[in-house]
Image (cartoon, rainbow, N blue to C red):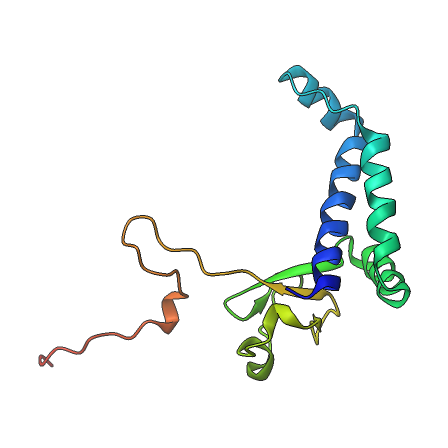
Length: 141
């Protein structure tokens, strides 16, 4: 995986965790269930370390996208950006360098990362969109 992409994903995850920690209702619910997360300072420090490792241009663009959309990084599943739910062009979605390069959605501009297909637990087959499966023709009319 591209090192800067990996840092962007980590920063995205840390930002989401910080938002959850700042939400008072969420903190109260978690404490009711027995989860106490009082390490806000440690998470903020980790965010600072990640930001220092990112290229300044990437960090600036990440912050702009986060301000605009709330999430600056989106997964791609089945050739679809899960930030805006638009199908990506074929040359991007079939690229062999998927997570080795930084790609951005041509529609929303979010940074993209590809998620490996998960096998279906019941059959062992890879999950595909139903429309991409071929039907078997029978000889009947």
